[in-house]
Amino acid sequence: MDPWLLTVIYASPRMKKKGVQADTRKCLQFNRWINECNLMEVTTTGTKFTWRGPQWNGRDRVFKKLDRVLCNVSWRLRYHEGFAKVLPRVEFDHHPIIVIQENWTRGRDLMFLLSNITDNLKVWNKEVFGNIFKRKKELLARLNGIQNSPTYGYINFLESLEKELQDQLASTLYQEECLWNEAGHWIEDQENLSNMVRNFYLSLYHEDKPIRDPIISWTTYPQNLDKEQHKLSSPVLYSECKKALIFIWALIKGEDGYSTLFFQQNWDIVADSVYHYVNQVWSNPSLISSINNTFLVLIPKVDKPEFISQFRLIALWRTIHHNIIVAQEMVHSMARMKGREGPKISHLLFADNLLLFAEATIEQTHCIMHCLDLFCEASGQKINNQNTQIFFSKNVDEQLKSDIVQHTGYTPVNSFDKYLGANIASGRTTRGKFKTD
Image (cartoon, rainbow, N blue to C red; front, side, top):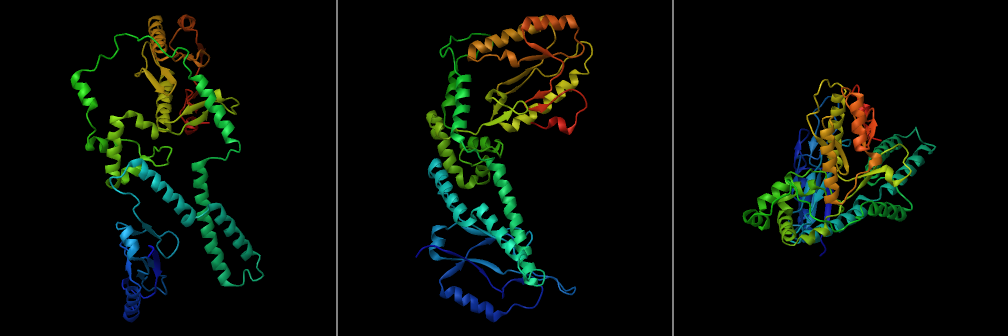
């Protein structure tokens, strides 16, 4: 027999709070029917009572367990760890119930399990959750039919039905909003746009000299010692794997859509598969290519951008707000500096965007230029002179400013209006300054 599930509502519960006593005869009758059909009740977690009755004439409100989930033996054998969870009640008198059936076989290959659960979620989304846009269209059509009815405003049933449909529509509209926030706006010619962006960055990051001579300096790392090499080549411990996962920000997610939060909250279930896969990658690093994809976001650098070069390519969007706040504080403090005091930090780095803070002297300028030249030589990257600017605090005299600008060749500016898309101009700090374009 195929596994199947049945959600049941009946009006003579065994469990209730307040009100008249339950009808024992009807409860026994219903239990006998369950046994005759070879059904069993699915374990339920959450609040005990699933229905809250109205309050009449100042009497006590009645609470009952009207909703139950039944299954046959085949379903229980297939989903032996499945259970039903009573969710919080929001607007209606009944609590919603969700059935959770485990689709994760402990110890199996991680990539196979992720692919399998993705397929199951797609089926659930199509057959259970349903099409949001289709549901919205049907609800609007039903509301239109009610409001155009000649008996509209005269029959209580139509008013009650209208209120119920409006509640369903409000929920559907919220789901639609969440979907658009997640997916963004539709692009008709997406393939051509993707190719244009990809080709731009392939050209931008193309190396003129793929093979470079090694750079030796006082900061060069020494050769790995035997002890350190042994430590790096030993298998990853279970505790190390769990600790590393806990410290990853929960909302970071990959191309497959599974965020770190998924693995953190389901660690007891997925632990063996994740641990096994981590050690596979540790011993064979090339395997990381199968899951190392990520989503990149293009953020405009200017109002109404017209070229790809006017966008900033980022992936770690969480860190960007931290950098913006620190940069704002640095610019604000530089506007109040006196004498030879300077900022307390040396740099802010985000992707290919770098802010350097230093004493306004020719010696410090020469040191910075030498470090940048050394970095370009070692990495193969280049400094974009057109986008590189110098901002001086007000306690630097004009002659020194002129000498530093001549030494660097960079453009002097009176203020930093934008950093990573946010307004960080000096002056009174307001909420609007932290809004990105």
